[in-house]
Length: 277
Ligand code: HPA
Image (cartoon, rainbow, N blue to C red; front, side):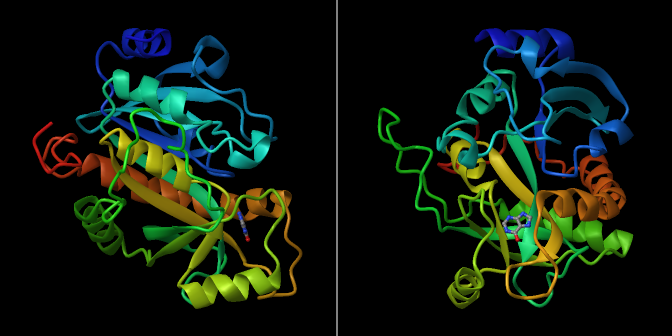
């Protein structure tokens, strides 16, 4: 077992079932959960050192319902060093610590008319506009199937939870742009034409890496602005954090319900081959 996985397993007193990567402005969610241990990325050798304000590295270990959970704040983005596999060591360590399901969250720009600022949205599929793939160079070559990259059964569970809470959580296609510049209005027009409802600078590499590790994946976006050219508002990282704050409470309420009423199947039921894990 690698050193980070060993530290996490010891701190968790056993295997961790599920990890949640908290996106920009959603990190506050980790304060709302009743967590029994917090570990700084500094103490985990395989974890990256983030460079962006608001992305401090910490793993909070919590129990919710019957799940042992790791809340991760401080993802690294492709735009920091140009490496789409920057999150691979962290995800490998989580997998070794037992994680079989990954919930990825992000702040995103809204493109589709149902995806205005303040919305919480469920990602149904993605388009990798950056063209980068985190599995390039991995040996042996992994031709991972991304047909159902965002687990249909778990998405249904999230939709059921949203309905029960009376929350509107539309499902849409997320398009990954490399960043760190925001998109141009022309790129957003192209994104819409190509079928995007949401745009953002994260999530896709992590989802691909997680699927190559047989993890089940779901992803949620906090929509913090209309994408470029769709409104008069200026786009900025500060605005992302400010608007995300208005969504955190709804996000936490939904996440809690999703975890507390986790479907009966063990988290590791589905593998890429459809075989029991
Ligand atoms: N584009 C890309 N990433 C984002 C945006 C956006 O409009 N808003 C928040 N993250």
